[in-house]
Image (cartoon, rainbow, N blue to C red; front, side, top):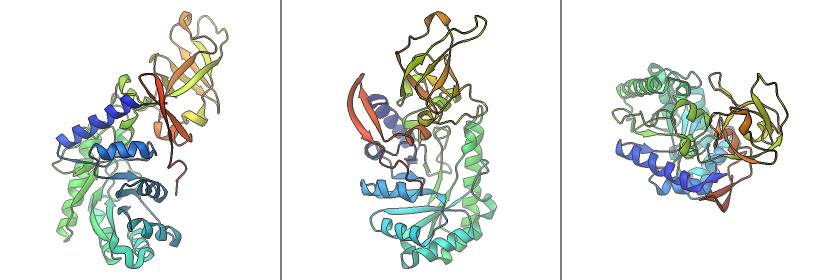
Length: 353
């Protein structure tokens, strides 16, 4: 279920905050995969959207979004190159690169259309996933230029901000990496116009002294991870999973009270970082914890034995990682002031290539 009023408040608040910093907002649409939400983000002033895959880019381009950044290094087969060429005919397309080989493959695949696609070199700012070190960006950029691609800038993903006490340090490392990479490229003769950073935990911490845009995604919905990290409040949670208490049995008097709900890993996802206190939370009882998941059921530990919900009672579950949850459903129920007002298709569900 998506609470429309909270969703729109989250969208407007992030747009206003980023605008006040003098930054561009390019939300990551892999979180929601829903064209109606993308339209609201664009109407609130987003410069474009970030996506994870060519498939996601195709969905949002067909919905009218004309500026899209595929924020991952791609290895472009001839079939994928053809899809990118078609996309570049209707939208401004940028792609992440982090190797000379990947840049060369991209340019070769695009052929005469290479000039229609720009690239941003990915820099590792501490997450240690993809991306090169800031001092190693020039060979990647030079390979992209030789392949006929426009080198527009640099980007990073401070994914290590998703841990207690890390957002401030990750934001600092992000700024340093973007600054260093930009200076190295400028010294090599590249005109860098985009310096892209910012996850949901760091977006409000990113400053325009270096970055030109941020790419948060989870902020539209919030989730249990962001709640536990202190990056959102309970009243900011816009997406919950409706679940029913289906089993409740006596537990030892010296142990926690437990019951079972009919929402498991196939709707909540199974992501649980080592620091997280459970597999999810309950919106109306924040002290409760989901302590175990099966495919279609979850075990809930309840803080007060005498107040447990009855079998048949409906509860609202906050997933740990909302990006996984949204990719597990075909559509969402949209509510406003407690009433069902619409259903939205998860249009980019399963567009993983």
